[in-house]
Figure 1 (tube, protein in one colour):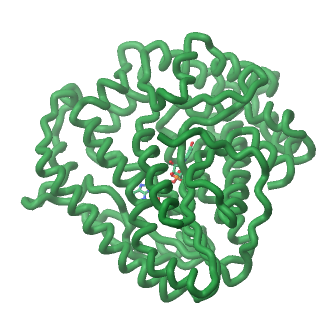
Figure 2 (cartoon, helix red, strand yellow):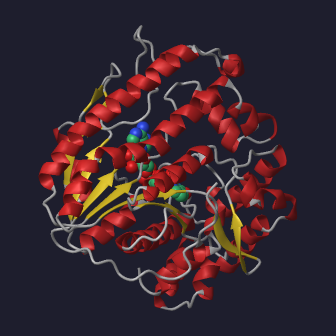
Figure 3 (cartoon, helix red, strand yellow):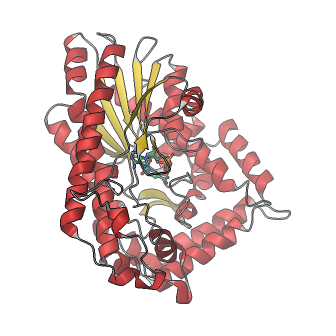
Length: 437
Ligand SMILES: NC(=O)c1ccc[n+]([C@@H]2O[C@H](COP(=O)([O-])OP(=O)(O)OC[C@H]3O[C@@H](n4cnc5c(N)ncnc54)[C@H](O)[C@@H]3O)[C@@H](O)[C@H]2O)c1
């Protein structure tokens, strides 16, 4: 088990510049964490290279991006994308009879999800097929990258991949009950996690969220050796999640979203970084605060711990950047609602004595309970209703501030990393914002 290792002082500015190369290992979406790092790489004048996970066509086959898709993706990234599909996971990969895990789940009725019987031998064959496909494609991607990365430059690989929910129709309604259900519509995460569907998710999460980092490090070995031989630096970063310290009752306190079912995979990701570090490779997992992105949209309540960032900004020095965020947030609230009320309401939830047991770092990740889910979801909904419009919310503003700050922190720290696993909590994130991200 990795011990809590928070970053407490702002790292020195990184020395990357023109001619150095930034490789984004995952796709870029408008509001995801990767935007913060891409912004820094762009600002430093680095050459930006990216990958795609590819797309599934109507028959389910994995294909590269088409002309329009690649043009859009390259415009968003501001760099060349190697157009060889790097979808990780295996939910749609076939066993020896051509049957994928998603095929096995076809036609399962909503009320029968708990008694699904999976052919685990076939699942294992699909898993192996998925790894073979991914690593074969990765080998071709690396050959292209090798040709594009000049000797002697510095290279920063940024891993963003996470996910792996099997794309079977039965899963989303079940997961909605696990993550957003209350009362009669609540399904305990532990019941789900111990069911065959949950066990399948666990294996998929490991492949997408954790094992891809190891594959990236292994497959880029040749590039790394060549760069280091010619005087350049190579660093790998990945985004982790393992709870986060935020201000609760005016004290920075570790807390977490529950039930974070990706948590076990995220710990494997930490272990992958630690194993690479042992071999002298600069691979660091940065455990980041909760924000709202495409990937976290399913987890209503994950944003509750974002609100105290407003208090952290004051605590860490305040000033024009903090004031700008406050003004933007205030303008999104309904008539008569103040930011102080929002922060106080979030704090009341985060400090709830009934939820004390969920703030135990050593017991992470925890499963939910009906009471915990009820308290979290009702508070999340109440806070969201304080926004003037549900389409334009305070959390989006705060998320943007966090991913930009985190981007700067990771960028700088990757220049001279000192550990394989680091926590970026609200104190350092706020301090970076106040100092100018
Ligand atoms: N959102 C949060 O609160 C939060 C907190 C801490 C860490 N993170 C981590 O930050 C990273 C980026 O996530 P984000 O929240 O910014 O959302 P995002 O949706 O912008 O990014 C998700 C990434 O995962 C990739 N991905 C998804 N499925 C994949 C698959 N099957 N194969 C390969 N790649 C796949 C996508 O291409 C994308 O790059 C993730 O590792 C996530 O776990 C997020």
